[in-house]
Image 1 (cartoon, rainbow, N blue to C red):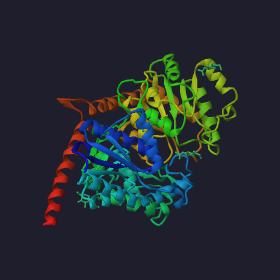
Image 2: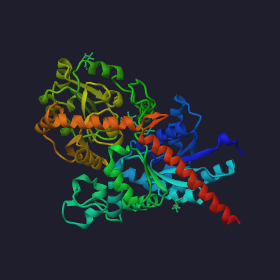
Image 3: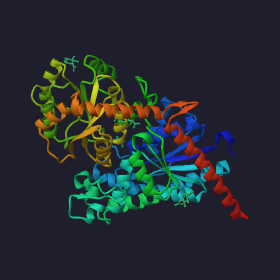
Length: 509
Ligand SMILES: *[C@@H]1O[C@H](CO)[C@@H](O)[C@H](O)[C@H]1NC(C)=O
Ligand SMILES: *[C@@H]1O[C@H](CO)[C@@H](O)[C@H](O)[C@H]1NC(C)=O
Ligand SMILES: *[C@@H]1O[C@H](CO)[C@@H](O)[C@H](O)[C@H]1NC(C)=O
Ligand SMILES: *[C@@H]1O[C@H](CO)[C@@H](O)[C@H](O)[C@H]1NC(C)=O
């Protein structure tokens, strides 16, 4: 048997994608930091390998790794594919479907821990996509918790849309979503085509519905957000799932409040993405130093997305015509290998050269150190796909947003940023949409304006940033809401755990 300080108190189970692994790892570190608990992360062998190599750069004795047996080729996937990264949409659905086969290996891993320690861990924290883990946790006598890597509003929309498919019950493009007030209408263009086409019998519904329903039966949810920035979304979510929701975010690289040049999350991200930045972070910052306060537009639509050749052209022309300085993280367009060399023919003739000579634009191929750019005083706005990670990074630095939504819950994040927070405008939705350079120019000028609507958005973004900073304050007599939520979460699971002991002791009599 292991000694008490070796006990694994919490076991976490992230979904097999970077957008999940990274925040779950950050959650594990945060829990260990705040409580001293040992935390085990369970996942498939290749994902564990990534996590292990990251932890090698940043050793943390409080974090253990557990491999769950998984053979991708048994599930119609190419050999050694265990992560959503570089899978086509078609194969991603196979990865989702095959993930339920982790149930038995996960159950065995928990039983092994119970055997070694002579008692179960205090709780299991599983991904929303692993509804089955809630039952498994319960069966070994540990508390079942769900973690949503998204925000309150986005999670609420995602959960209710998948469970209810409200757009299928109307002929109109606009519709109500159960759990949202009547005035808060959604539009079909906000739905990814998988969801738009879902009818309850398709592959995606057959995966999503049982997994989300299973997660709704957990004891409570952790959410990667901040109470004060999303009171509305969190209120809706709490009412809908009828369980506690602890907003413990933002799980961003620490110390994110200060401007550190190398962050662990960045190095993990670089590794996961297998990319080294072509332009060094230092060079980006030097370039920003040459520009005025809040004058630069930062453009990146996420590491897993790209846009069509004509989008790239229109965006480039619109930016050039607006005359606003920009840093653009640029990738090969749709239809080309994302990891291939970027070709200058994808841009207007002479564009790179003109931008270089006039110092108006910096093109960064593939990858940039996003949080450092966002935290620079010259960065005024962020053209983003509104993935939750990028959204939190932007808000934490008080940077207003231009949305170009792609997949998942991004359109709901953007809806909240526009309607509830007033810190964003949408440029367009999806990759099928067409945009014109005039539209790009108009929106860029409006948002970068220091007066009017642009100025208003800036003020609101700065208020949100203040809330986020306050939420993670961790002083003895002055704890922010996210720190308090984590404390409350820990005492709730301990209490719940004792109740479980009492029940099982009674059952043994
Ligand atoms: C992506 O694909 C390449 C080759 O096709 C492979 O070597 C790499 O491991 C894959 N990455 C992930 C994260 O699956
Ligand atoms: C999850 O835990 C709660 C509270 O401990 C319990 O009531 C519930 O039955 C568990 N869910 C499942 C599916 O076992
Ligand atoms: C968020 O995304 C950015 C850019 O895609 C990346 O640099 C960063 O490491 C990510 N952080 C987390 C916590 O996922
Ligand atoms: C501009 O081009 C020169 C020469 O190719 C290069 O050394 C320099 O780094 C470029 N500047 C920017 C801002 O891209």
